[in-house]
Each structure stands twice: as C-alpha cells, then as structure tokens.
Image (cartoon, rainbow, N blue to C red; front, side):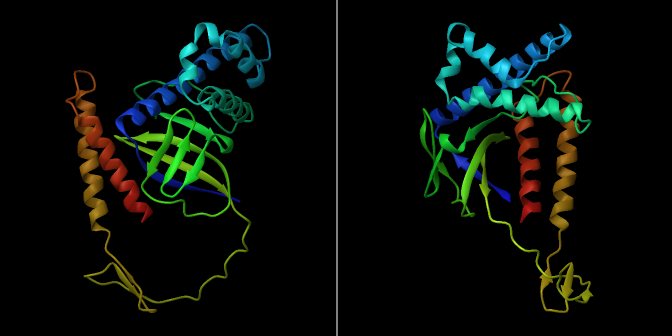
Length: 242
C-alpha cells in the first residue's frame, strides 16, 4: 500500500527559481515528447516512451543544454508519464494526452527515491541542496518517490511512502445524532461535530473571485487576482482535509 503526505515547502528565492526551472524543463520535455509521438504515429510508426527518450538524449546536449541545470528526473520522468498516459488512453480509461500550457498547467516535477533524501523538516534535492519543509514526514516506510508542485504562490512536495497492508478496521457500533445550534451535531458518545458554516462562506468568496477573473480574462487581469483565487482554493482544500 502506498500513501502520500503533502507538505508545504519554504524555499529561499534562489531555490524557488530552481523549482521553476525544473518544472519548466519537465513541461518542455513533455510537450517535445508528445509532438514527436504524434509525428511518429502519423507516419505509421509505433512510438514508445523508451524510443522517444533515446531520441531526445541523442540531441539533448547539443540542442537543449539548459536541461542539465536541474535534476535529471525533470527530463526523464515526462517520457514515462506520457507512456502511461497513452496506455490509459488506448485502454479507454482516459482522454488523449494534451500539450501543457505554461499559464494553465500546474508547475510540477518528479523526484525518484534515489534522487532525494529526507531529514528533520527538510528534503535534499540534486543540484540544489537542502530545502526546508513545514513539517516532518508522518509515515514511516520506504520512500517510493516524490513530486513537487506549485499552488498559488506556494510550493509543496508530495512524498509517496510504501506501507505494509493493514487489515480493515471493524465497523463501529451505531451512534445517535443530536442536531444543535452551537454545533452541527452531537453524537451519543459525547463527541461533537463543529459547524462548517465557514466553508460555505469561503466557497462564496471563491465563486466571486472566479467571476472577476473570468470577466477580465479577455482584457487584462489585475496583478495578484490569480494569486487571490489560488489562495482561496488552497484555503478551502486544506480546510476540507482537516
């Protein structure tokens, strides 16, 4: 069983630049591989992730030397991701892979388990060094890999950990529920469930921010409007996780 723990990162300005470069490299390689896949497929050939990766590496040092400035996973993993995406597409489980836009796609890049190291509230990344994490990894097990992503103005790392399979828990006995005014409900066990009215208010604010952003998408968005929208979405997401 694999579980993931998403942790907020606190990079320095220089480290944030590295993250942006790595995410940009990953997006570029994905788009390059997808274009080549389409070209080979239209020519009647059978492209594979391995063939495309070999083709890219043959011209990489001469045509794309800047891809060496970040971890090798930023250039290697997109081929594997594209291969899995096309497999899911041909099996009818997903839509056809699309090109990634710099403005609309979420910046991210992958790190294999041999390309990272975890310490106390920090993670080590190749060609960058140690980056501060907001909290320690809560799971104990073999680290399978990690993916670094950006939401609004913040960077996060989602660490996948292999854990032993556990037996399903026995169902709890039924309890009574008393709906109240100060609390959403009180269980017969004495446990209280707090009112989630704040979530309704936050969703309303998010809808209003999205409307303002949509009205300006064909003219010019004011500075920070996308950041405000992303921040509200992140706040709601973390509130639901609590």
